[in-house]
Length: 395
Image 1 (cartoon, helix red, strand yellow):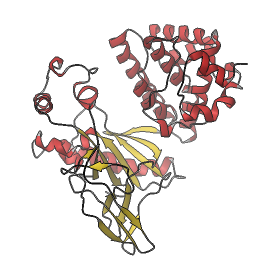
Image 2 (cartoon, rainbow, N blue to C red):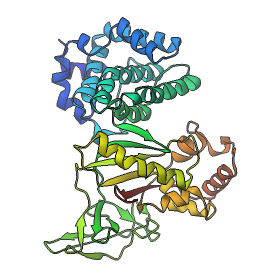
Image 3 (tube, rainbow, N blue to C red):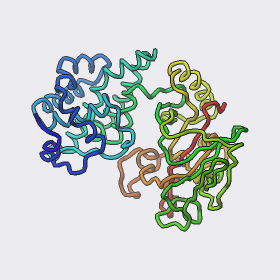
């Protein structure tokens, strides 16, 4: 049997993710046939949803290659175990998982797609347990949409690394669309500290973030301001964020007889996502949030949610320079208690123009917003991610 050290050596992987090391021995001791679907299972599952015939053929070709290659078999076992048995990769989300040197990028993308699609049976079981079998096709449609888009660009029904990470919680049965918005069940892992006043108002503190900020209140590698944080039995003292999400260098003191921690690391939360298939009309957003609360209380009564959390370029308050005052995006931002997070150099490609990274001069504006953003970036402007919280009982 292939050992984990020899797997890494043969695959020429020098820095594996921590979760691999935690679960590799368990994964490699499992018979591959318990994890990798057979040709019949693959075709039956893929045909039931359905997937394009060429996609089924490509997935089956990768399945046969894995079945005949000890290194790919071992890697598949590790990935599948971490993703769908141990479900232990949350802390590594968006890190790039390495692949063997024997795979080129097209093959690696197809490997990722097969790993995710192999979680279909577990997805169906999770949905059944929570009375949500009606969501099966919607979850698979998300997979089909992403792999078909990859095919249009690269000729292979694969997945980029970041798309694999998006689809992983979908295939765990943790992502549901309710009206205009999508919601993902997760755990609170952010370094931001969230406090709630007895009046219901929320406040974000930087806490002990090892981050510095410049005079504009934005994160900067060598900024002149660094957060301070002190907690006693009676008060908390630290740096909060202004209404626009910028860092306030003047510390505030919170009386713990009036303020309490709204969430602790590991507490269940709901990540809020914005599908890109329509406008963010304020009424549609509010209707979605109002419907989401009873939806999650009914189907996941064992989880006590306190917060919706959103991390998105759409929460960049600097967009106010580019949008009219009555913008749907600005209305959406107003729902949240905000902190501007890291600079987002990829948003202009991934979310605004929906193209692979390229020189700015190759971007072709299709809307007036595209034109304004492009002019803003070319003139030295920067786009930021915003981190926002909204109380579960906020409406």
